[in-house]
Length: 262
Image (cartoon, rainbow, N blue to C red; front, side):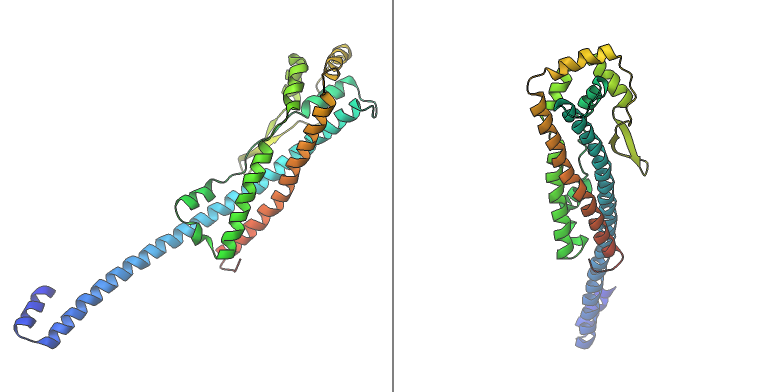
């Protein structure tokens, strides 16, 4: 209809009407384009808010996981210090308690911190929509730190293999079944594992004495145990600050979601 009217106005040489027709067409194209842009921006804004909330949830979960692993490795380190003291002529420790401590030191929780949502945002080109340059830098630094933390938490040293080679398997299994890893839950999700404390497994004195002699005679046992305990310290050096960093990151992301400046 607009085209037919435009032709009629040209034939009639009604240039003012022609100008109006052209203006109507241009305005229609502009409004249509602008509406499309506005709709696209609205969709991207909704996606950014959704991603930000999912990122907040991921960071919060990482904080819970770090706290669980911190508690786990503090327990493991206590066992290790008890076993090392027994090897070093410290306070009297029964053969039973020595064996439990020596085995429990070798327990690990190598669960990795979550990066799925962050990786998804990067892959989908949504990261720049998370907030201003400062917040982007904070989030980037946080996840860069996770890559270091994940690597340290995943590391194991020869003591773990050594103790499981020299200690009688049947005894290992009894300790593990009675006092080994149990799932730790938070908000209906598994955040890690915890050890059963105190360990009440029963070991006859004669059996404990024989097994303890075998374990104590393992070459380099004390040195490998010492290095393994030091590796637990290294893990805790990552996990303990990670709890605080996760809390801070959650607060910064929540501020942006609430319309505040990060």
